[in-house]
Length: 443
Image (cartoon, rainbow, N blue to C red; front, side):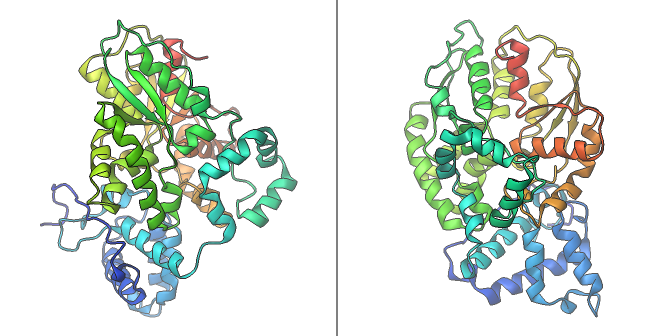
């Protein structure tokens, strides 16, 4: 294996149940091994803040080498990691099967799991990861909750910063008063004349679409029905990505078992599983099989799962899209989410938007700076804004801005605003909403 070879990277299953996984001595030894290799390479200096923090610590040490850095400070590197996987997939020349065997994101996940095993995250931070409970509780009072969480509500936002650790300037996503599952009880009529008629798909609602942005799910269902796809909306529970961000791997494994058992019956009936949020698609397709490599239901679900953009492009390439899309005015800027890129499927959102007639499209493939709840935290929001500044600069020319990542889109618009733009772009939370608009299925 040579540095920079063209061989595909491979990932090992996570040995999270092995006692060595959380052993602090063995973990520190592995961190030192990997950090020393990173120090000698430094190709990842311009990705997230983890690498500048590491390199700055080394450069400021008495020796100028890793041996001069206090191991207690390694946690600063882990804290800055958003688990985006971009270093593993796009930069590192030493990923498996190279003998150096480096998987930096999963090493950071191991460090986070070990840290959280010794010291649980703060109470408020842990509560934020209970997305299903929070969504059910907030839905009946969504109007009040959204009023309280607006950036302009300085009193409430300062209180939220103090008690929940959410930066008072961070743009928080609103909650919906009615969930996607509730709004989708009546299925749209399926277009029997569409070339793809006969396909069947389950829309796995995801916690964000179900509780925060049902419009994405409704647009997806309308587009699929217009293209001949019979759909069902199923949502057993959250995929566990917020828990993964906190290093709570046992809880993620429990979510994987529960969801895969529920969706197995649909897979057995020939339904594709279509997922509208890339982070959730990444969990079902890649992270769960690495956490539970011997679970047959998890494997079968991964093989049957599609990212939403991926599924629409698959229809276009195999059967062809239903006719009737109209041209959309203005320049569309599409941000390709890191967790969509991490699925190693190509820029499917861009491919889908190129189906629009005479589209004026600009594509950005760079980290927005956000990373789940990480980007809202009081200590990390300024870092998120800094990392996302180049994307915001490129997005200033947009008439319409869209991103597959629902949190990234809001963050980018906030970045555009922070640069003093005279007019902010219209934000559509997912590219599927542009396809629905072009068909005249939504406003």
